[in-house]
Structure formats: structure tokens, C-alpha cells
Image (tube, one colour):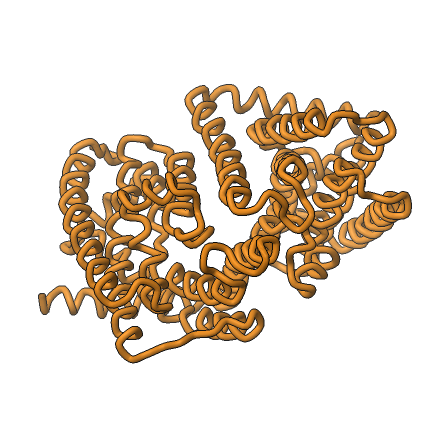
Length: 267
Length: 260
């Protein structure tokens, strides 16, 4: 445990230093991250006004609050190993990280954390600007914020484990971009990113209830905005833990099977 | 005509090059279909809550999605691969190869690289536009003509925009990130422009000309585009083509090549 903390400290320092080289590019990416919530927000505000101001309990300002928080949660929980893992296998650079004494996942976690440390202030500032610009109203209490922090942390761990497992599928598919596209599409609709799950058609919501995606993005947002009450929030935290246990077990199995398939350069 | 022939020739080379990778065919087709599913699912979720979005009915929104997919397909087919290659070539001095050819260098640099897989998107976009036009019923010859003219004008504007960005690499280094911002903003064009707040509408019209390329042609399918708007689109296309040509020539004068 202490050894692992040392590993993380060292890797964090390396990743922070290497990412701070490209500050302008990093900033630009965050700015363009605003477009997606603004598009969703505009679409749903138009739907709300077409229905006389409300869609199933969501007025325009509720949509504003929802999509602003979803933007923040999406930023906190986002991972990008999926985009890189197939080239690590194809080019054999995975072999180098396999030689290190620490599991390769730790390097990806600290890369992720480093990037979040740098970009979080920018995203939060943008969230503030959007909240004011679109008239989002937040009714926060200390309990809700505490529950949100816990839910967001679990959401990050769950999403990281799940997407790292999806990345591992590149051991079998070699080129994973098409499959990743499929995953991201499913995520967009079943996690509540494109629309709150309260306003999507019932069959879609029932599918979303059976899958882990909603616990990774919309759940923390719903907790912060107070949809559903404390007992629902506690049940949700339980669902997150359950999914996390399932995904971590699967991840261990897939990692082993994948490594057995992996044939590096020179073997 | 000669330009069109050359573009088709390069397109054929691109297709032939990609036909070597048969397994990739399925993956790329799947990717295009996923894009289609994404668009249709978004429409479905919205339309399950309201039949009309800011005055656009289901088939109007489908036409808009069709134009969005078609224009995105053409950008992916010629514009993006060629312009990305142009920026790299300016860095590395490989633009020399285009300059020594007997054809106009701007033409070669603009259609020389092809991503053949975007043909799927072009076909899907045309299919959606066609379906929506049939659902509307009568389409006069005049309406078809306006659609074609506005589509070409929009493509010309978007092409000029990309060329101008790519040409800026004659002076600046590393502008590729700006192109990623274009992709993000282009996402906004799949919905009617009128739902966006004022600042975003202006950004999508002036800063990044996706409004002209996508919303205008879709408007003709609703029969809601006046003559002055069509004329305006053609004028904007001519001006931006001329401006980007000037910028290209100015950039070439500055370009020093690999060997000098």
C-alpha cells in the first residue's frame, strides 16, 4: 500500500510535468467541451417551450442545472485509455509497461488524475458561467454535497474500471475505434448525458436501469440536484458498489485472458 | 470539368487503396451506421416528447440530419484529409511535390488526399434527404435546383474556411488543434439553428460557417428559403472562395520549400 502510494506520487509528478507542456491545447479541449451541454440544453429548452414550459417535471432552468452538473460529472469521470490501447498493442509499447513492477492500470490512473487536476478549475469556471448565462438554480445543502462527492468518486472509479475493460477488448479486435464508437453511443443515451433519464421513452429507461451507465454520469447529478431523496441516493450508492464489484472481477478475468493472447514484438 | 475529373481520379485511387483492407470495410460501415443510429436515436428521444421542435416537423429534422451527414461526409471525404495533409506538408516541406505538378497546386492540395470511407456517410446523407423529400411529396424542379445550389454554396464556404485555416500554417505552426474545435462546433449543426442562444448562433454563422452549409439547404426542403437568401449564399460562397485563394497565393509566396 505504501509502496503503491510512492508509485502514484512519482507518476503524478511525471504526468503533471508532461501535460503542462501543452497548456494551450489543454485549454482549447476544455472550451470545446462546453458545446455538447449547450446543444443538449438548447434542444431541451426548445422542447420545454413547445410543451408549454415543462417536460415531465423539467422546466428550462431545471434542464440548465442538470446539464451543467452533468458536464462537471462527465469531466470528472472521463477516461481516454480506450482511444490509445489498440495502438499500444499494435506497436508493442505495452511490453514496456508490462516490464515495470507496478500494474499498467496505475499509470493510466495517475495520467487521468494529473489531467483532471490541471483542467478542473477551468471546467468549474465554465460551469459557473453557463449556470449564470442559462439561469440554472441550485438548492444545495451540506448533506447533498457530501452525498454528491461520494457518488462522483464512485462514478469515477466505476467508469474507469469499465472503460479500461472495454479498452482491453483491443486484445481481440486489434482495431477498436468502431467498437468504441458503439460504446460511446450507448453511453450517450443510457447514461443520461443527452437527456435526463426522466424524459426519455420508457423502454429506453428500463434498459438504462439494467445497465451500469447511469450510475457513472447522471446519478451524481441527480443526487446533487435532489431528485429522489436521501434513501434513493443511498440505494444508488449501493448499486454503484455492486456494479463496481462485478466490473472489477470481470476486469481481472479479461486482463488475464487478454495477456495470454498478447504476442509482443520479438516473442 | 477538368477539376472534377481530377477529383474523381484521386477518389478512385483512394478507394482502390482502401480496398486492400477488407476487414476494415465492415468496421468502417459499422462506424457510419453507429453515427446514423446516434442521430436517429437523438431525434427519436426528442420527438417522443414533442411533434414539432421550434417549428421543425419530424421530416424537416430528418432532412436537416441528412444534410448534416452529407456535408460531414464530403468534408471527411476530401476536405479534412487533404487539409490535414497540407498542414503536415507545409511543415515538412513536402508541398514541393504538389508545386512541381502541371496542375494547379491548390487543386492538387485540396483533393489529393481522400478518406474513401466517408462515401458511406455521403450515401446515408443522400438517402435521408431523399426519404424526407419523398415524405414531403411534391418537389418541384426549382426546389431541387435551389437545394443543389445552396448545398454547393455551403460546401464552398466550408472548404474555404478549412483552406484558410490550413493556409495559416504557412505563418503559424501547429494549428491542427483548431480543427478539432471545428468538429465539436459542427455537432451543433444537427439541430435547427433557431434553438440556440444568440451568441452561439452568431458563432455558428460567422466564426465557423456551419449554419450556411447545413441549415440553409435543409431550409429549402421546408420551402422556407427566399431568393435573397439563396443569392446571399452564392455571394458568400464566391467571396470566401476568392479570399481563401488570395490567402493561399500569399502563403505560397512565403513558403520556402524543403531544399531552399
